[in-house]
Image (cartoon, rainbow over all chains, first blue to last red):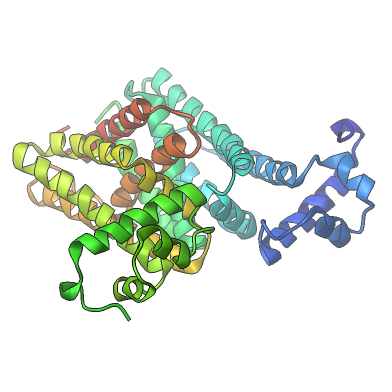
Length: 200
Length: 200
């Protein structure tokens, strides 16, 4: 059982997360053991288990932090831009740039899906967090009368799906460049926004 | 080296593909060996290699056939429906129903992404085929003046991305029902179509 988060050292937790991510990238998630993480981070075995239950718990924490970083990036932009069309489109650029800056985490996210039930549940928590956030933003646009009253959940899913697929094309397939990835995500959302706007 | 396709027996090829798919589902793709496929299908070792180079070649053939089945299903509908809006939306229902009827192949497709370079290339061939087909259909709508002149490639990617993501939510996560999957894909395309139509 991990000790309560308020009693954990933030720096030590971050250190464990960074070492784990590096190992997941270097050796692959599946080939990395908790023993490896303990050795690489230089902490005692007991210390690791003060912070995390198992390897999936580390993955979950990494992705949770990642989702919070994306939401914080978008929320920051909301303070600078009021227009809902601009917000809808430009926040997708910001999101993809956060994905691109965190290339290692993005690659991990893109590679581990479908491998096992506990991993899928980690990804689901990450994705549900983003889909929920995207949904609330579209609902706000509808309440403000700027967007048409469309079913929100399918659209929120398509946003994440498009981001995820183009991320995979960049970071795993290396089929498109970082710039192409961002440009394609933005372009799609311009077309989609046209379908959302009430005053076309 | 496989023998030329015109010299292959269609039935034997199909038999090898069906046996392989069943093994991929029962044992998992990664745990299935060519030896397993040969044993399950009851052919000689030499016979297998008359048809396929390796395991990835079997996966590639399964996905190729799957893409052709989807494209044929859509093309069939085109002969029944002329309106481009109806076509755009309803063909997504048809696509998802083909995915749903081929649950085993859909699960294989949803699970193996990101696992290795040769597998990713098999998936890419499958996805590129569908994206190319979707692109040509949108381009046709633009030429006909029914759709606005939007950049087509990002939209075609978003279509496949949304289908793929909601398929994964159904077949891997079991987070939504088959009916919810189809309904969400259709609903999203209704909103997106509004962004495509020239006469809004």
